[in-house]
Image (cartoon, rainbow, N blue to C red; front, side):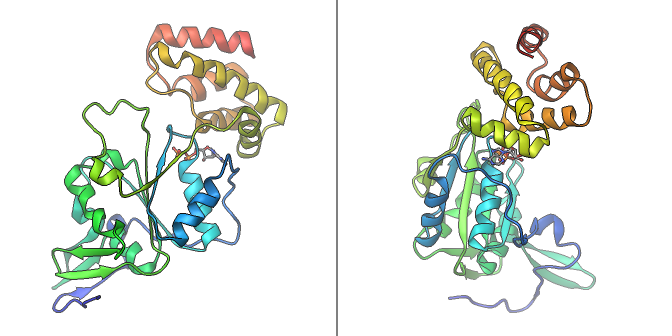
Length: 285
Ligand code: ADP
């Protein structure tokens, strides 16, 4: 079904390709560190084997990206990651013609690159992308897994191993943004959340390079901060923020400074809320 381009030369790589091609990353020898929190590994593996596209739902910094990196390694597939934003166009995903010297060459976008290579294509924060951009992924979610390239007239058939994975944070107030049902219902939805405290402490100790007792204390503090979520925080502190705090601590930054800069500061600019959270740090640590 794959028709070759006639005319302009195809150029899927090389210098200058980087900003468009977003990179095809091949798995290294070591598994990216990931601690399972449920049945997510089996569900991902099954979706990959049964050619089902996957949607990961969960708060920012809960491990979605790390999970996908780990799964790409486990499945031995290259990984293409695209951070979606509202300026992302369909051409940014599929590709475009560029002028190079005296030639016009076609440059595959990350989605096309992944379809050709049988890679896992991870569209992070898909909800940030415009609807007219999102629709280009629809034909790839059908059984036939095709990607029509409007500009070249080519229809790319996704190679074996290709899998589409999208993620978004349903808790975040996206105002008018939401995925259309016609998009949502093409995916198996896997919900991820912050790990249970003992697992999160293991992750923080490992990733932050601190003793487990310090990791446990940070996780306990964070869970109290998370309870403040409904008092005006747009998002509660994530595992990522605890890891960053642990890294500062592990490098000798005192506890209060580490918590202020890495755990609380990124959450809000609201002085009252910050003061309340500082009090909690003092009381807990
Ligand atoms: P998201 O993509 O959901 O925003 P990330 O995957 O970037 O979040 O996770 C942020 C950090 O938290 C990771 O870099 C990693 O250090 C840590 N992390 C979160 N969950 C896990 C997990 N289950 N196993 C290992 N590390 C994790």
